[in-house]
Image 1 (tube, rainbow, N blue to C red):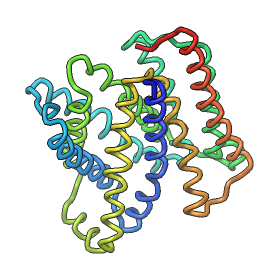
Image 2: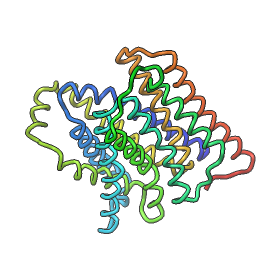
Image 3: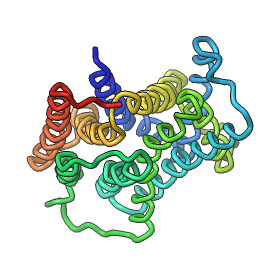
Image 4: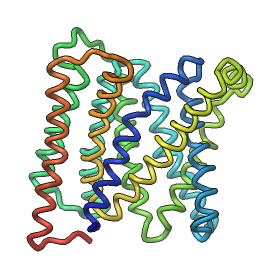
Length: 305
């Protein structure tokens, strides 16, 4: 398997893991877990699990100086804590569909910031792909023909911040990769985010939530949000940027919208309109078609470093 194929597979794994997260979040929400509490457990469990994994397989990645630790904590606070909380604010003040589309403006932010941070060339094909996927996301989110939509300034701002946060989850590890191992950034980033989110947690309330939830359901949901949808997803996301451009990773992550829609249809029996189906097809064709084209270019003599 060549490096580009490996990067694409990792990016798709990210999209799938993020796309199924709604299964676990909805179940935890039934037991009154708040968005901040869920975000805390995502980061804390991902950080603890990845720390143990690295301790057994790559202990050198856990070595870090004070400056590096501060950078990792700031990375976690900016890329994870602020992103997760801003998404919670967005969905509480504006329709989920609008919040989703704002989040999936992240490829645009990746393209803009990546241009300055890594001097990545913005090819016309990628600009077109980004806007095609954005159109698909608008259709999937049912923003066309879905009735009156009331927007809130704070909610919109929070959604934009969330989109930037998602972009930084992709870009910052690559930016610091020359000085710090990606695994080091990830593990201490997760733990740093958990520490920041800890200040918003009332453990007396959390204890009541734990008591109300069936143990088997709770363990499965926590495994889902912490290990599958955060550790596996974000590790795959960051690792993919070792093999493909950051813009490519962000474009492929748009497949999360499609996976999430399918989860809603098959698991939660949500109704899909014709426009939503068309939107999902547009995203899949746009994202995958773009990478097929890029792959052919690489085979014709262009290489990615």
